[in-house]
Amino acid sequence: MTHNHQLSRFGNVVAHGIDVVDLADFSRLMNEQAGDFLDRYFTPGELATANEGGNRIERLASRFAIKEAVLKALGTGWGDGIAFTDVEVMSQRKGAPTVALHRRLVKIADEQGIVRWLVSASHTATVAMASVIALGS
Image (tube, rainbow, N blue to C red; front, side, top):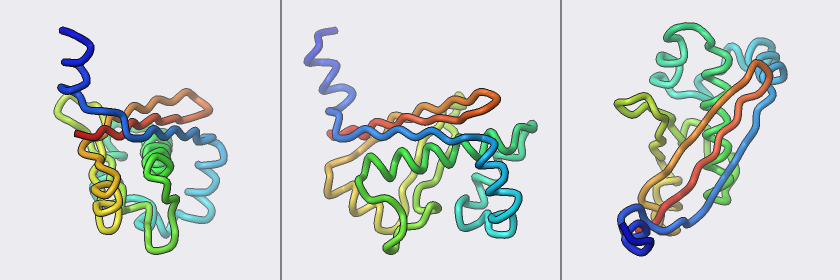
């Protein structure tokens, strides 16, 4: 497979975003301040899948890092009519994460020519991190 064929198959990189979340700080935030307001940060589907098999804080922190990385790649941040739930983290069939955008973010991504996301996340006992690459056609 030639290099040019790879680009046409996978698309051109439009943007990249990365985020790191400290698990101790995140756990404190979720337990003390946001416990009753998790629906401001996560969709019902994200909350449901985070409960599968333990490690709930690590899973939520990874999803939060993915959301932040997507917002960085889009250059928007949150606020001004953009909510954390406008980025929804889901699992593909084989378990790899992917994202779906909602509301204004759909238009913003479309204006930037973004048609697909490559998403990677990982965590240790102390941090969760995510890297996202926005691809154009």
